[in-house]
Length: 291
Image (cartoon, rainbow, N blue to C red; front, side, top):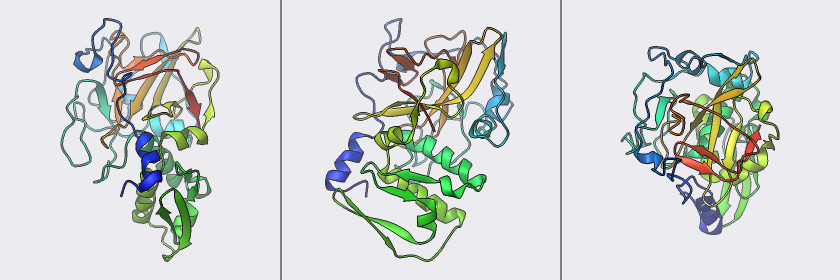
């Protein structure tokens, strides 16, 4: 049911798809889709969290995150065993398996719903749910309509007719994790890059970038990656780990850096850059945003 008439068209346009700027050419004038990337940095392949598996590069240290923060949640997120493949929602492997360095240990669901914007929405929502910050679990549809977890668990459901959305109470109260997962599938169905862009604030200084911030193209079709790790040297220079979901719905994964294998999987980022190249998508311009 993804999705209906005009509203369907809007959602389709803002899904994560490759554009002429994704898959694209790197500085060596070769597509990153065909590069084999061997990192020069140590990777603790036997470790099971983002922070433990990816030590900071030489002369850098991981930036400390506040306990109970979204950044702390992400940097301590459990990873699947090293060399795990990216799997689609139907359990099959995607074709491109050489541009990721790790897989987040979280389900993708069994429908083609949890795509790029949905990946960071999922992680953000799971964090807020774990912290019992239920009032903050709320996301807009691409139409602009707001669907909160509080309303959904109290029985309110969305009824979409073309580009019109109506909310009606049709179910009993249910605050179970199973019902929460159904709520998220609803959000994945009707939210996307354009709604996520409106729900976040611009980051104007590179030094202000932190774990959980996003790099987003809220376009047609659009894409999102998010910062999964930050390290800093004594000069105040920072390096970043990037992660993403993609289309079709697939495993959330940490990206390699095919453009600088010496620091891969870490990236140098600049909020003022006209273009930011990531392993599977080029962002032009660089639109960094924060929850």
